[in-house]
Amino acid sequence: MTSPTAPLTFRTGFAADPAARAAVAALLKPVFEIDIAPLERLGGWEDGSVPFAWFEGDACIANVTAHPKPMMLQGKAVTPWSIVSVATRPDRRGRGLFGDLMARALAHCDRETDLVILGTATPDLYRPFGFRPIGEHAFAGPPPAPVPASGLGARRLDLADDADAARLVALFGDRAPVSTICGLRADRPFFMLKALEEPHISLAWLEALHVVAAIEPDGTCLRLLDVVGPAIPPLAAILAELGTGLGGQRLGGQGLDGPSSRIEVYFPPDRLAWQPAEIMPEDSGWMVRGPWPLDGVPAMFSPMTL
Image (cartoon, rainbow, N blue to C red; front, side, top):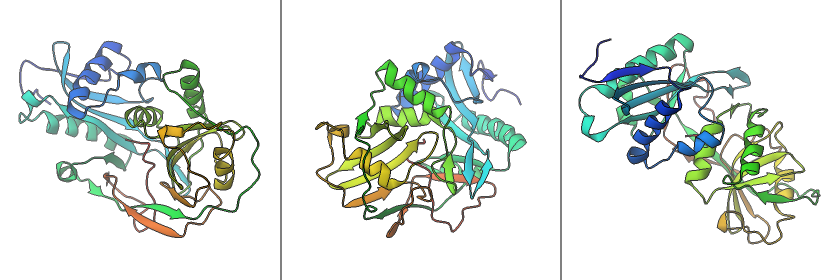
Protein backbone atom coordinates (compact mmCIF):
# COMPACT_ATOMS: atom_id res chain seq x y z
CA MET A 1 0.00 0.00 0.00
CA THR A 2 1.10 3.55 -0.63
CA SER A 3 0.79 6.43 1.79
CA PRO A 4 -2.57 8.22 1.39
CA THR A 5 -0.94 11.49 2.32
CA ALA A 6 2.60 12.79 2.73
CA PRO A 7 4.86 13.29 4.65
CA LEU A 8 3.41 10.70 7.02
CA THR A 9 5.16 7.47 7.97
CA PHE A 10 3.30 4.19 8.31
CA ARG A 11 4.25 2.04 11.31
CA THR A 12 3.06 -1.29 12.63
CA GLY A 13 4.15 -3.88 15.17
CA PHE A 14 5.38 -1.33 17.69
CA ALA A 15 3.48 -2.61 20.74
CA ALA A 16 6.78 -3.16 22.58
CA ASP A 17 8.00 0.42 21.98
CA PRO A 18 7.18 2.62 25.03
CA ALA A 19 7.54 5.87 23.08
CA ALA A 20 5.19 4.70 20.32
CA ARG A 21 2.67 3.44 22.89
CA ALA A 22 2.77 6.85 24.54
CA ALA A 23 2.13 8.49 21.16
CA VAL A 24 -0.99 6.35 20.67
CA ALA A 25 -2.13 7.23 24.19
CA ALA A 26 -1.68 10.93 23.37
CA LEU A 27 -3.87 10.49 20.27
CA LEU A 28 -6.65 8.61 22.06
CA LYS A 29 -6.96 10.86 25.12
CA PRO A 30 -8.51 13.94 23.43
CA VAL A 31 -10.51 11.88 20.92
CA PHE A 32 -12.21 9.55 23.41
CA GLU A 33 -11.43 11.32 26.70
CA ILE A 34 -9.84 8.04 27.85
CA ASP A 35 -6.34 7.96 29.27
CA ILE A 36 -4.67 4.64 28.51
CA ALA A 37 -1.33 5.75 29.96
CA PRO A 38 -2.09 4.10 33.36
CA LEU A 39 -1.93 0.72 31.61
CA GLU A 40 1.84 1.03 31.71
CA ARG A 41 1.74 0.26 35.46
CA LEU A 42 -1.20 -2.15 35.21
CA GLY A 43 0.34 -4.88 33.10
CA GLY A 44 0.71 -3.04 29.79
CA TRP A 45 -1.12 -3.58 26.53
CA GLU A 46 -2.85 -6.85 25.71
CA ASP A 47 -0.48 -9.63 24.68
CA GLY A 48 -0.34 -9.98 20.91
CA SER A 49 -1.64 -6.49 20.10
CA VAL A 50 -0.74 -5.33 16.59
CA PRO A 51 -1.11 -1.56 16.07
CA PHE A 52 -1.34 -0.01 12.60
CA ALA A 53 -0.67 3.72 12.56
CA TRP A 54 0.35 6.78 10.64
CA PHE A 55 2.94 8.97 12.32
CA GLU A 56 4.04 12.52 11.67
CA GLY A 57 7.48 12.62 13.22
CA ASP A 58 7.05 11.24 16.72
CA ALA A 59 3.32 12.04 16.84
CA CYS A 60 0.71 9.39 16.06
CA ILE A 61 -2.04 11.00 13.98
CA ALA A 62 -4.13 7.92 13.13
CA ASN A 63 -4.32 4.44 14.64
CA VAL A 64 -6.17 1.14 14.44
CA THR A 65 -5.10 -1.72 16.70
CA ALA A 66 -5.94 -5.39 16.23
CA HIS A 67 -5.50 -7.90 19.01
CA PRO A 68 -6.46 -11.52 19.74
CA LYS A 69 -9.40 -11.88 22.13
CA PRO A 70 -9.39 -15.42 23.61
CA MET A 71 -12.85 -16.45 24.79
CA MET A 72 -15.37 -19.22 25.21
CA LEU A 73 -18.24 -19.25 22.72
CA GLN A 74 -20.91 -21.93 22.98
CA GLY A 75 -18.59 -24.17 24.98
CA LYS A 76 -15.62 -23.88 22.63
CA ALA A 77 -12.32 -22.11 23.29
CA VAL A 78 -11.82 -19.73 20.35
CA THR A 79 -9.66 -16.71 19.57
CA PRO A 80 -11.37 -14.14 17.39
CA TRP A 81 -9.58 -10.86 16.85
CA SER A 82 -10.83 -7.47 17.96
CA ILE A 83 -10.46 -3.98 16.51
CA VAL A 84 -9.77 -1.28 19.12
CA SER A 85 -8.20 2.16 19.56
CA VAL A 86 -9.55 3.50 16.27
CA ALA A 87 -8.79 7.22 16.10
CA THR A 88 -7.66 9.95 13.74
CA ARG A 89 -6.52 13.37 14.83
CA PRO A 90 -9.35 15.82 13.96
CA ASP A 91 -7.20 18.01 11.71
CA ARG A 92 -6.20 14.97 9.62
CA ARG A 93 -9.65 13.49 9.05
CA GLY A 94 -11.15 13.12 5.60
CA ARG A 95 -7.86 12.06 4.01
CA GLY A 96 -8.39 8.30 3.87
CA LEU A 97 -6.27 7.41 6.90
CA PHE A 98 -9.06 5.55 8.72
CA GLY A 99 -9.99 3.44 5.68
CA ASP A 100 -6.36 2.69 4.93
CA LEU A 101 -5.60 1.49 8.47
CA MET A 102 -8.83 -0.52 8.74
CA ALA A 103 -7.97 -2.32 5.51
CA ARG A 104 -4.51 -3.17 6.82
CA ALA A 105 -5.79 -4.28 10.22
CA LEU A 106 -8.60 -6.41 8.78
CA ALA A 107 -6.22 -8.04 6.30
CA HIS A 108 -4.09 -9.07 9.28
CA CYS A 109 -7.14 -10.33 11.22
CA ASP A 110 -8.38 -12.32 8.23
CA ARG A 111 -5.09 -14.20 8.12
CA GLU A 112 -5.60 -15.21 11.76
CA THR A 113 -9.33 -15.87 12.14
CA ASP A 114 -12.72 -15.86 10.45
CA LEU A 115 -14.34 -13.83 13.25
CA VAL A 116 -13.54 -10.19 14.04
CA ILE A 117 -15.37 -8.18 16.72
CA LEU A 118 -15.51 -4.58 17.87
CA GLY A 119 -17.50 -2.33 20.17
CA THR A 120 -18.59 1.09 18.96
CA ALA A 121 -21.04 3.91 19.47
CA THR A 122 -20.96 4.64 15.70
CA PRO A 123 -21.98 1.37 13.99
CA ASP A 124 -22.61 2.95 10.59
CA LEU A 125 -18.90 3.72 10.36
CA TYR A 126 -18.09 0.00 10.33
CA ARG A 127 -20.89 -1.49 8.25
CA PRO A 128 -18.97 -0.87 4.99
CA PHE A 129 -16.22 -3.15 6.33
CA GLY A 130 -18.64 -6.05 6.79
CA PHE A 131 -19.50 -5.59 10.47
CA ARG A 132 -23.04 -6.12 11.72
CA PRO A 133 -24.59 -5.56 15.18
CA ILE A 134 -25.28 -8.52 17.44
CA GLY A 135 -28.21 -8.97 19.81
CA GLU A 136 -27.26 -8.71 23.48
CA HIS A 137 -29.14 -9.58 26.65
CA ALA A 138 -28.63 -9.18 30.40
CA PHE A 139 -30.27 -11.28 33.09
CA ALA A 140 -32.23 -10.34 36.21
CA GLY A 141 -34.22 -11.80 39.05
CA PRO A 142 -34.35 -12.33 42.79
CA PRO A 143 -31.22 -13.57 44.55
CA PRO A 144 -30.67 -17.28 45.13
CA ALA A 145 -31.25 -18.84 48.54
CA PRO A 146 -28.61 -17.53 50.96
CA VAL A 147 -25.62 -19.62 51.97
CA PRO A 148 -23.26 -19.19 54.95
CA ALA A 149 -20.47 -16.66 54.50
CA SER A 150 -16.83 -17.33 55.31
CA GLY A 151 -16.52 -14.30 57.54
CA LEU A 152 -13.67 -12.88 55.44
CA GLY A 153 -16.08 -10.73 53.47
CA ALA A 154 -15.29 -8.22 50.74
CA ARG A 155 -12.81 -5.39 50.35
CA ARG A 156 -12.76 -2.82 47.58
CA LEU A 157 -9.58 -2.88 45.49
CA ASP A 158 -7.86 0.41 44.76
CA LEU A 159 -5.99 0.34 41.44
CA ALA A 160 -3.87 3.28 42.62
CA ASP A 161 -2.42 0.94 45.26
CA ASP A 162 0.44 -1.12 43.84
CA ALA A 163 -0.40 -4.21 45.91
CA ASP A 164 -4.06 -4.17 44.86
CA ALA A 165 -3.13 -3.61 41.22
CA ALA A 166 -0.65 -6.50 41.33
CA ARG A 167 -3.30 -8.78 42.86
CA LEU A 168 -5.71 -8.08 40.00
CA VAL A 169 -3.01 -8.46 37.33
CA ALA A 170 -2.10 -11.84 38.83
CA LEU A 171 -5.72 -13.01 38.74
CA PHE A 172 -5.86 -12.34 35.02
CA GLY A 173 -2.90 -14.68 34.57
CA ASP A 174 -5.14 -17.62 35.51
CA ARG A 175 -8.55 -16.30 34.56
CA ALA A 176 -11.48 -18.67 34.07
CA PRO A 177 -14.08 -17.52 31.51
CA VAL A 178 -17.03 -16.06 33.37
CA SER A 179 -19.35 -18.06 31.08
CA THR A 180 -19.00 -21.03 28.76
CA ILE A 181 -21.56 -19.43 26.44
CA CYS A 182 -19.82 -16.07 26.07
CA GLY A 183 -16.90 -15.44 28.39
CA LEU A 184 -13.51 -13.84 27.92
CA ARG A 185 -10.34 -15.70 28.86
CA ALA A 186 -8.14 -12.58 29.12
CA ASP A 187 -8.99 -8.89 28.45
CA ARG A 188 -7.01 -7.41 31.36
CA PRO A 189 -6.26 -3.94 29.90
CA PHE A 190 -9.86 -3.26 28.97
CA PHE A 191 -11.15 -4.38 32.36
CA MET A 192 -8.61 -2.09 34.03
CA LEU A 193 -9.52 0.89 31.85
CA LYS A 194 -13.23 0.42 32.48
CA ALA A 195 -12.66 0.39 36.23
CA LEU A 196 -10.46 3.51 36.04
CA GLU A 197 -12.82 5.45 33.79
CA GLU A 198 -16.02 4.61 35.68
CA PRO A 199 -15.37 4.98 39.43
CA HIS A 200 -18.97 4.05 40.26
CA ILE A 201 -17.94 0.48 39.44
CA SER A 202 -16.52 -1.28 42.48
CA LEU A 203 -13.90 -4.02 42.29
CA ALA A 204 -14.63 -6.20 45.31
CA TRP A 205 -11.90 -8.62 46.42
CA LEU A 206 -13.57 -11.74 47.84
CA GLU A 207 -10.70 -13.39 49.65
CA ALA A 208 -12.49 -16.64 50.53
CA LEU A 209 -13.43 -17.21 46.88
CA HIS A 210 -10.17 -15.83 45.43
CA VAL A 211 -12.01 -13.69 42.90
CA VAL A 212 -12.65 -10.05 42.15
CA ALA A 213 -16.26 -9.13 41.40
CA ALA A 214 -16.99 -6.00 39.38
CA ILE A 215 -20.25 -4.64 40.77
CA GLU A 216 -22.56 -1.65 40.74
CA PRO A 217 -24.47 -1.55 44.03
CA ASP A 218 -27.59 0.62 43.96
CA GLY A 219 -29.91 0.51 46.93
CA THR A 220 -31.20 -3.06 47.16
CA CYS A 221 -30.28 -3.88 43.53
CA LEU A 222 -26.89 -5.38 42.79
CA ARG A 223 -25.52 -5.35 39.24
CA LEU A 224 -22.84 -7.97 38.67
CA LEU A 225 -20.72 -6.93 35.69
CA ASP A 226 -17.88 -9.46 35.74
CA VAL A 227 -15.95 -11.94 37.87
CA VAL A 228 -12.18 -12.49 37.59
CA GLY A 229 -10.48 -15.49 39.15
CA PRO A 230 -9.30 -19.06 38.52
CA ALA A 231 -12.86 -20.40 39.03
CA ILE A 232 -16.31 -18.82 38.94
CA PRO A 233 -18.16 -19.27 42.25
CA PRO A 234 -21.94 -19.64 42.54
CA LEU A 235 -23.85 -16.39 42.78
CA ALA A 236 -25.05 -17.32 46.27
CA ALA A 237 -21.45 -17.53 47.49
CA ILE A 238 -20.58 -14.18 45.89
CA LEU A 239 -23.54 -12.49 47.56
CA ALA A 240 -22.69 -14.04 50.91
CA GLU A 241 -19.17 -12.58 50.82
CA LEU A 242 -20.36 -9.19 49.55
CA GLY A 243 -22.84 -8.99 52.40
CA THR A 244 -20.34 -9.56 55.22
CA GLY A 245 -17.08 -8.17 56.44
CA LEU A 246 -17.51 -4.74 54.85
CA GLY A 247 -17.24 -2.89 58.14
CA GLY A 248 -19.61 -0.23 56.90
CA GLN A 249 -17.52 0.45 53.80
CA ARG A 250 -19.67 1.72 50.97
CA LEU A 251 -18.45 0.10 47.79
CA GLY A 252 -18.19 2.57 44.94
CA GLY A 253 -19.64 5.33 47.10
CA GLN A 254 -23.08 3.72 46.85
CA GLY A 255 -23.21 0.58 48.92
CA LEU A 256 -25.98 -1.93 49.45
CA ASP A 257 -28.83 -0.68 51.61
CA GLY A 258 -29.54 -4.04 53.15
CA PRO A 259 -29.88 -7.41 51.41
CA SER A 260 -30.22 -7.35 47.63
CA SER A 261 -33.78 -7.97 46.47
CA ARG A 262 -32.89 -7.81 42.77
CA ILE A 263 -29.83 -9.11 40.95
CA GLU A 264 -28.83 -8.03 37.45
CA VAL A 265 -26.09 -10.03 35.72
CA TYR A 266 -24.41 -8.62 32.63
CA PHE A 267 -23.04 -11.85 31.19
CA PRO A 268 -24.58 -15.30 30.66
CA PRO A 269 -25.11 -16.76 34.16
CA ASP A 270 -24.54 -20.42 33.26
CA ARG A 271 -21.69 -20.74 35.79
CA LEU A 272 -23.47 -18.97 38.65
CA ALA A 273 -25.88 -21.77 39.68
CA TRP A 274 -28.73 -19.26 39.42
CA GLN A 275 -31.78 -19.07 37.16
CA PRO A 276 -32.79 -15.54 36.14
CA ALA A 277 -36.46 -14.62 36.02
CA GLU A 278 -36.01 -12.00 33.32
CA ILE A 279 -33.94 -11.59 30.17
CA MET A 280 -33.37 -7.94 29.27
CA PRO A 281 -32.36 -6.66 25.80
CA GLU A 282 -29.13 -4.64 25.87
CA ASP A 283 -27.25 -2.62 23.29
CA SER A 284 -23.57 -2.26 24.14
CA GLY A 285 -22.58 -1.52 20.55
CA TRP A 286 -20.86 -4.80 19.76
CA MET A 287 -20.49 -5.78 16.11
CA VAL A 288 -19.07 -8.84 14.38
CA ARG A 289 -17.56 -9.64 11.01
CA GLY A 290 -17.78 -13.32 10.12
CA PRO A 291 -19.73 -16.26 11.56
CA TRP A 292 -21.29 -15.52 14.96
CA PRO A 293 -22.44 -18.69 16.80
CA LEU A 294 -24.71 -16.85 19.25
CA ASP A 295 -27.34 -15.50 16.85
CA GLY A 296 -30.63 -16.00 18.67
CA VAL A 297 -28.91 -16.97 21.94
CA PRO A 298 -29.41 -14.62 24.93
CA ALA A 299 -25.87 -13.51 25.79
CA MET A 300 -23.60 -10.50 25.99
CA PHE A 301 -20.00 -9.51 26.59
CA SER A 302 -19.27 -8.24 30.06
CA PRO A 303 -19.47 -4.43 30.24
CA MET A 304 -15.91 -4.56 31.62
CA THR A 305 -14.57 -4.99 28.10
CA LEU A 306 -14.25 -2.00 25.77
